[in-house]
Length: 78
Image 1 (cartoon, rainbow, N blue to C red):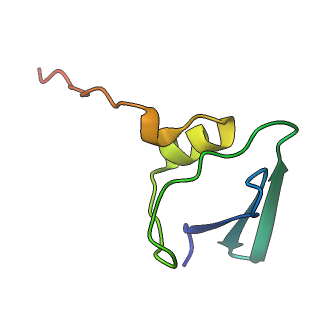
Image 2: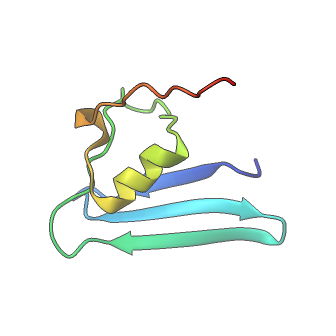
């Protein structure tokens, strides 16, 4: 379970709690928006949603991840 984050959003969508496990125990991060709501990913009721750390950073910044488009990333080989 180490390394996994569990996100919980309230019904209005303006508050978010993140639950994580550290070697010393659980910790909780709480964020409340002054205006607007978090753009929560769409999923079936009760189904878990997996997201990348970059998507989590966008979500916490107020960006709607569903409306973003990823560019292809190429690495130069010698």
